[in-house]
Length: 238
Image (cartoon, rainbow, N blue to C red; front, side, top):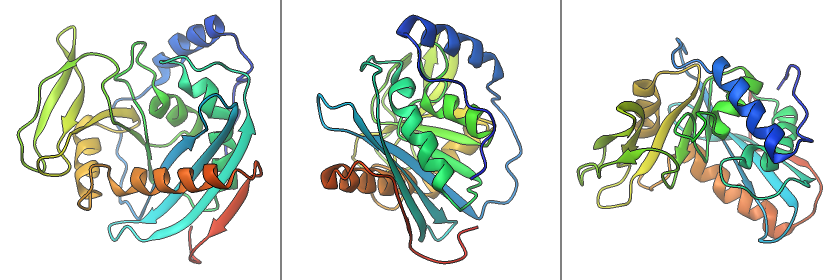
């Protein structure tokens, strides 16, 4: 993928917070994503106590969700683990992985928050700005706001509220399974983001893009090569 200018990640936590607050104004909560033929999931993994970050991107055809391409990149980071600032720890490896991707996904799903974040700029929103394409945050836990439990059936939803504003949705992707927390990353509406999460769910709690990314990230971490690599599974990845 071609990326434009990417800001420095060599920041102190205080500088990172100021950058988040500045970037928040650039997030777009709507957009016409047009016809979708390719989606992607992104995730990062690392051993507890380690500063080596293993980031991956998995591209899948849509709507069949066949894996088209998988890429990974491993980098060392000096940024500490601080909830709410994980993009500054995982971002450099993710950026390198996206640069290795030959496919051009129409929408990217991230294992983390979009605007449902204390400063309105979780990893899906932050990376969406840097990638300049539609992104969706699909988190396994709530970071900001309050949410009621959705109904027990697959497809049930309930709003995530903060100060009376809806900043995301809890979404039941599998019957009688814990919901996920969906929020807008960038250049997409919340309703479209929820629809895509459900459309890409295949009987697991995580939608297929982030599930495949999670599985691949764990594989790369276990191998622990420390080297970026690319694996193209099928030709015609875009």
